[in-house]
Length: 323
Image 1: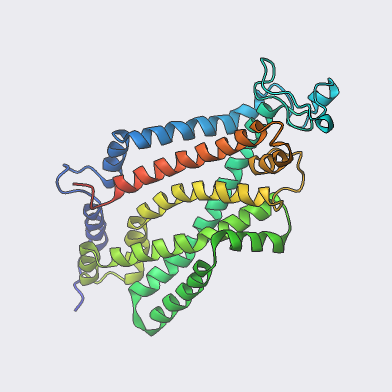
Image 2 (image 1 turned 120 degrees about the horizontal axis):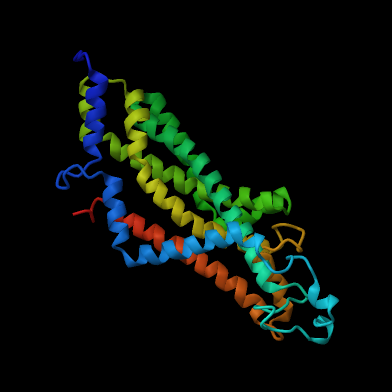
């Protein structure tokens, strides 16, 4: 039996707001409480500092590098003779030395940070967008029920399971090899790998939200299930997805570097990218191991920053830990 109330929509909005607020925090919302917990978490602070430095270097650094990333200044000045095993190391003028083509390594590391950030963010957004659509439709269909709802949910999840059954790096390599080596290919390949994770996560979160008290109350008041899903269930299901996006950025940076190392990234090796720099340094490990150490450390520290912040966000938003 449907109950007809004049301000039904306002009542449901209020129920949804109450569902996102802690009872024991005097109206402090979920996100406000999470931010407060993050500020008290040393891991979150360390991760945030790493990421702020990384983003500033990636966005602003290329405008202030002392040398062009493709300028073979070392060869032009006769300082680098890689054929004879002469590749000078760090100095006061060239902080990280030269690579085998006489290019300033520090300048290439700074410019390469922008490429790494671009690939990580775009590939994560691709996976998030596609995964959110699939997971959102599946979660809404599961919440609506009925034969067609179950069929849509089951069909989409079987497709997601097929992607999950394949090793992520193997799937990314296969896609990159199929589309051809380019920076765009790396973004697409890494993005596709993360689609099933976001789809599964959003679907599960929506199903859990569908059993919440405010949803049951809205249903009893006669609000359409589709409206409940779009206006309340989906927004309240996004917290774990946002956390996963932060963690996926770390994975995306590592996978993108792996694809570039395997030669499936930008075919123009003159364009600085940390994975390409690792591949270029391989023949010269005995002469200048720093050529591989610098980009490897950059990848590790950046991925660590995203991981620390993502794990701290997960703990801050975990309802079992918010006591």
